[in-house]
Image (cartoon, rainbow over all chains, first blue to last red; front, side, top):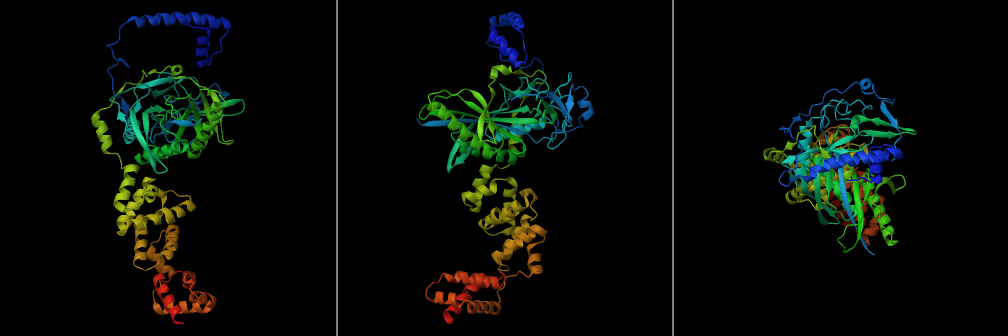
Length: 95
Length: 477
């Protein structure tokens, strides 16, 4: 399967990545190769196999609805690159 | 050409659990300072694992059952991937192919016409962080991230903005009756989006749909849909095509504005959440939850009409809130008389007093039993109905009983014939012109004369007696 340049641009946009023209071409080739490899799975006949959400034998792992203390605010923001007014500060988001 | 709007609603309601969806942070975040209800799990720090809150699942099943949904025997959480700073993990834990509830319905009524709106699905997910947009940057408060969120998606069965509004009102009532969400739109505890498209009347094809977000009140929903329907009609009339976009409702300028181009379901790259084992919902659990469901507004409305002889409108007003309905029933039981006589005291006087104080029914300072006692005093002729209203206002303000107030303020009805006769005589003497008019045949003036006698007796006179005395004296002299 060969991705188009537009596919790569769309995927980059979803990941909020700005790519150069050269990167776009390189990733187009690499991503196409990955998809080709994954596409080999399509050759298997899975019509009798129900979709599998997990391979673990676990079911219904739940906890009781009890609140417990949260982190102290100074710990919350300790690793943040930028903060203001008790919040994480990020670059402007335009709707 | 005549167009018909096709509307589907997506409603998100925050669930009233004590803790968040996948961690133990306190879920009561309203008014809390930013980032004080967060932990490594809801901040998406490396190495942590989410654990499902059993209560949130139970609340979702309650809502699903109340909306006549099928409850899944096998349900899976899914990752919805998108890149936005309101998601600490880069994905939201939601549900996709195997939601907890599907295929339900909700009846709404517009202009006396009942219509059934299909519910496609009701699923559980986590809320996102709150963003504050400042000039050159944005601030992120993760308190809301991870609060359990119930998403209810309707079929595109809604045909008018008013029907959409009624759908939301009914949904809010049900969620509040169940006690699973405050469903308070002003506080963002219930949020909604609408998908709207137009098609020529008579056609069955669906047009291109536009998603309208930022509908923060029942009023906004109606206004935004009206605006959007008109806008799309204009585009189609001019021979254009409607673009599939996401619009936001601008409350200030009352218009919809394009927000961003639509990301399609494929772009979210949903896949089963590997950190959460699937849920197998036993039929025993479903039956147990069903047995605990309270009587819902629709059933209560029908019962109030059948058992208490209320008319549809009275019943509607009384079942809007569970607290009001309970109060009414308690008052009726204590009163023992006709329920129809109790209803207007609640929907009229009591609501007026509550509104004036900005109080909710749950905070009403007059117990239902005390209201019943007041009505009994009126029935026994101890006070007039007019005095009763004054007494209720005082009960509301002071918390004293009706009997205490009547006694202390000397408000008991005056039925003493001699006292009333004197008052009547005084009024007739003071208004000879009106008396003359009565005798010329303008008999309705007796109402005005009665008013004067009531004024003379500070509203305490037994009105029946006053009328009799007035009529007798007017005939005599």
